[in-house]
Image (cartoon, rainbow, N blue to C red; front, side, top):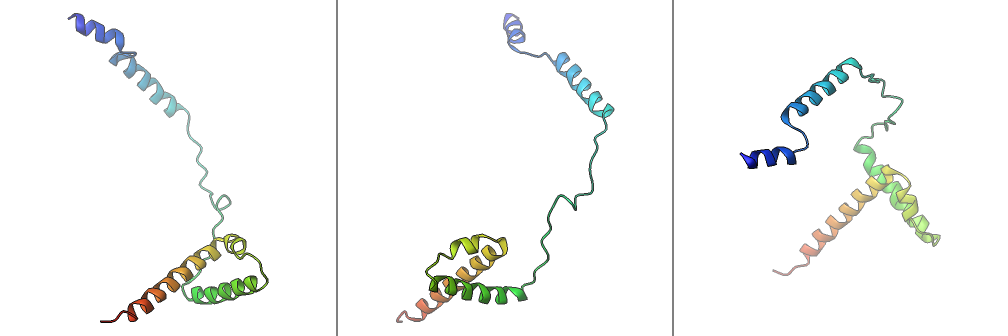
Length: 111
């Protein structure tokens, strides 16, 4: 029995005080209605839908822009990182180039 009293002293809240505070907090949240703004169109900038057909054209344009930037002895990374669409197209372009290099390296293996 002494261990039970010792445990009760160590516990900050008893079950009764926890229940009372829980009910008070629940009642307070019911009294104050929450105003939810459902008009989110002005808060989120929605990018226009881009199709997969545009990806090839964007890859071509980005490739030639990178070549032009390198020909002028400039760094093309700031141009690529300036826009999220360019980052996406650059990533797809790197994946395609890596896939082609892997394909060609497998063709060179003697069997």
